Length: 306
Image 1 (cartoon, rainbow, N blue to C red):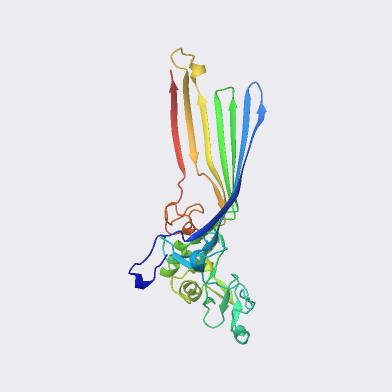
Image 2: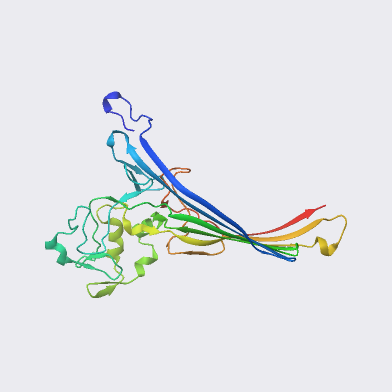
């Protein structure tokens, strides 16, 4: 917490926040099939967790800069931990703020139109309208996480394992995309937009997304749904020990494994699962800033037992 300048101390480490956390964890394990030759087991894991700031010392509202770049988090009593704080691009010309007032004054609304990409744009300049005031974008953390794990064995020689992971309701701030907009090198610059009946790949729009109100400012345009469904693990193994039938070798298993083979997501960045913020931070977890994605990997192994 910031201390009064008269104390000669910049900040004081203190218990500044009251926190509350709750959640659910559940697991289902079942033997789907059990026969002389085949064994199939299935496991489903479910978790749902939420943390909220119940109080801030002195009733203050604290805005914290992400370690990943220029994105801001707001720490405010009554709100979830990790909410991003920034300016809004509008989805309707007559859109209202939290107080019920129009963001664009009624006498100026005729100067704006809803473009074909869903954002409100100035008819003349082709630049998007961005609110001067900052608001919270909401909770970036997932609504729930699930895993689906199958393990199958056949005649004790062949085994197969597969795990799918489902993360639903999470969000990421695509800082990588924002800075590519800044430099004019993102592929979106080639995408045409229809504004007031005229269609073109308007540089003014894409540059305006980055520069309007505050250059490099946090804007909801780059705040994306990061839900995903991913094939996390896939493995095959075959044991040749019984075929060889050697008294010296009890196990000779060849294994082929793969990770992160397929991901289904609407997120436009490299990986919806990454975070570029501070390691192990309770709040700095919702920004993607040029972070190396989870890699698709393959492994071949052999297990030998005597």
